[in-house]
Figure 1 (cartoon, rainbow, N blue to C red):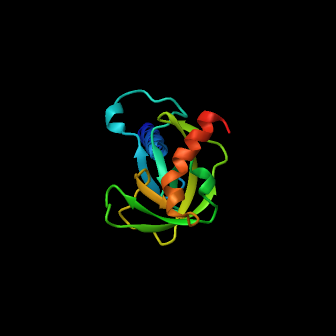
Figure 2 (cartoon, rainbow, N blue to C red):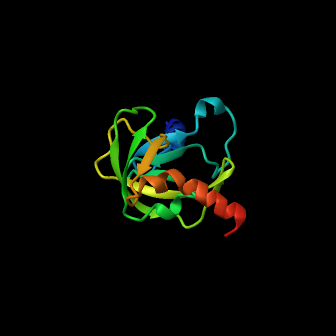
Figure 3 (tube, rainbow, N blue to C red):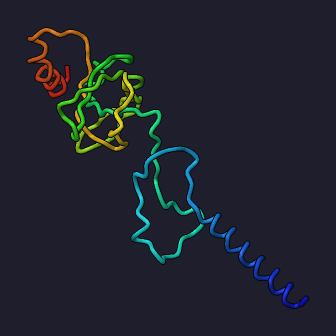
Length: 164
């Protein structure tokens, strides 16, 4: 009887060890979000190293818009200026935004330099919006004359070309 009790305790200890291992194998994020990168279906049965990234999770709160501004136009953007965005998924719906910050350093993207402007929506984002969506952003700037709008790019090009 003592041998049977010892075997039962041993089986219970093994079961507890397996349950603990299953509990440790659960993947939990420290915040609520959406998986934006990573698919474990392709890695079934493959070994995984400790510390290796399996997923990339994006927070849903607070959402922000990251606008790319060409280096020619960044001087016209003033912090706290407004604008609107339209996403590719729903181009007819426009949402008001406000520029919070323009990054001080440019990054190279597709044969041009762009500055990143962080904008926040003025209203609560829709339930269908997700991180990584793309679209068009129009940012309000100071009022300009029609002559300036039509000629400023040509004048800037000539200034750079002739160096005056």
